Length: 59
Image (cartoon, rainbow, N blue to C red; front, side, top):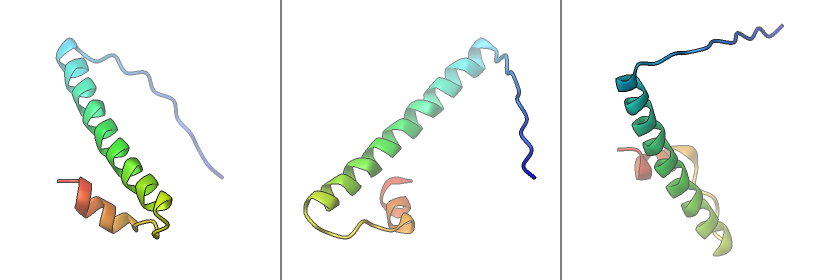
């Protein structure tokens, strides 16, 4: 059985700023990893494994 909870968060203005900054960084890393995988797919290479992507894009 799976349980799920729903929460509503009311961040302060400072927290909103930091969350927006965090999600912006996450989006950049995601897009870079996606572009790498698409480039390798188009060139006929094998998709890199998760650990290789993490080493390459997560600092």
